[in-house]
Structures are given as C-alpha cells and as structure tokens.
Length: 368
Ligand SMILES: *Cc1c(COP(=O)(O)O)cnc(C)c1O
Image: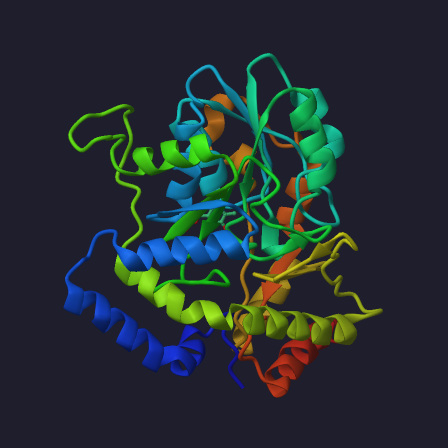
C-alpha cells in the first residue's frame, strides 16, 4: 500500500466541478485583479473567524509582512516569537528591519511557552507573534495578558490553524491581527499562493488595504511604502468553492487523529497533546519518537509519506547568525526538531490506510 503525506488529488475530485465553474466565471469576467470574489471571500473569512474585517493577501507570508508593516514595525524594534515554526514567521520580522527575539516552546504543545515571554520583553519590544502550530492555538490567555501589560501588539500567525479555537475563541480573533495562509497544503488551500489577514481594528484594516496596494491612496499618491500583497480573484474563487467543505474536512482530520491516538496509546509513539482549552484542526498530526530519522527511512521504504516539521529551529538558521543565538539557547525547540514527525492525516484517508500507517510505525519499534 502507498500512503502519501497529503493527497490533494483525492480532495480535488470531490470539488472539481465547483472549482472549474468558479475559475471559468472569473475568466469570463476578465476581472483578474480584485473584484467581487475577493470581497466575498474576505467577508466569509471574517465571519468564520469572528472578526469584523478581513484583507486578502498574496500569501500567508505577505499577510504577516503586511501586518508588521501596517503596524509600523521597523528597524530598532523587537518582536517576540517562537523559534519552532516555518521560516516566514521570523523571516517577515527580519525583513521589516526589526529583530526577531525567540522564546522557547512548551514541549507538549510545541507552541511558544508563555511563562518565558515576560523576561524577553525590553524597551524595544513592539509585538508578540505566537504561532498556532500544527492546527492548535497557542496559549493566548497568558500571552495577551503580557501583551496588554507591556502595551504590545499581538500578531497571530494562524497560517496552520484557520477555524481552530482557544477557549471557544477563533484563531485570528484574539490578537490585534491574525494571519492565514491558503498555501495548497494548508487546511483551506488554494490553487497556488494566497493568504488573509483578519482584525477587529478598523483603522488598522484601512492601513492594511492601502499597504497591500503599494501604500497608495488615492491611486498614484503614496501614503506609505507598501507592496503588491493582493489576493488573486481566481484564488478567491477556488477558495470560495472549497470553503463550504472546510468544517467537514476538519472533522475528518480530527477523526483520523483520534484513530491514530487510539492505535498508539501505550506504545513508544507519543501522540500529539491537545490542550483542553483548544480544538485543533490538525494541519499536521505530529508524533514524537525515539530513533526518529530511522523511522522516517523505514516509513518511506514502506511507501508512507511523512515529513519533519521542522528539522532546524529558527535560531540556528544560517541567515539569522547575526542575531547571535547558539545551540542550547532553546533546548525544547531543539529537542522537538530532533524527535517529531508528521504522519498523513488528510481527510480522505481510508481506515485501511490509517491502519497501515499506524501498524507500520509500530512494527518498526517491534523489530528493534
Ligand atoms: C505556511 C506558513 C506560513 C506562510 O504561508 P505562505 O502562504 O506559504 O506564504 C507562515 N507561517 C506558518 C506557521 C506557516 O505554516
């Protein structure tokens, strides 16, 4: 049996008709920048996220970059974030000229450890950017308490966690802004790059819209140095066609996760910890295991797709050498990067496939 990490074709066949019509409609209209589909998607995502406003962007990365730029974060500023994330989180901070300040993770949830944030705050700190990793939100209660105490902005990197909740509150709705990604492998994925920013702050909303269009308002008169951070209407149309299925897909991912949880209970394979405060959308199903790299080779030999998210924490990346961090600075992030592994959890997995994945992983340890 062959089980890929993700099978986008399996999903595409279930929504193909709607998607083809939606793309064709955009092409027929020849409104290929902006327009009603983008506005409609923004409206839908705002409602879905319990936020008043949403701004479509060219990617999740550009959602983060636009947010930082619109919040006036620049050289001399510091932004606190996690070292255990996809590059874009820290990359965008650095691209504004600000300095990413890393804080170690909670070893159970893999999200930023709120207990370690306050001691990282300085006079230069402007924002905290928690990442809701693998589909589960960070511990936003204490994070926003610190943000409010020190007058910092909260920027949620919710690229992996659209519609997931913390104490019943939606990802993106707790901080000043929330950023989503529609990269094809995310739970709501487009036919290419796309992203979205949500906020309840109307002034910021207006800035985000201006910044996304080269900072111009009106056209050819530039208030800020912005960029081209626009979401394409073809992407918006594809995403609108997929959106009605998102809840079912999340339910299926949770069902798959529960299946694995049961299979791995009491074994060498440590299953994901989901806080009682959170509902995860399982963008990834992360196990934690001994001999991780050997298991990866074993699974791949047995035609099972798996992936290490993330093999090198941000503080040890070559491009961030100038920040002065070294191995040992964030032991939990470093340990996680050596022990975690994502297994296939996509909605269309069959029971036989899940059985094969779980049994194969367990057989690796039986054979040791
Ligand atoms: C995917 C992702 C991003 C970037 O999104 P793109 O749409 O690929 O630009 C940012 N942060 C995290 C945590 C992500 O997983």
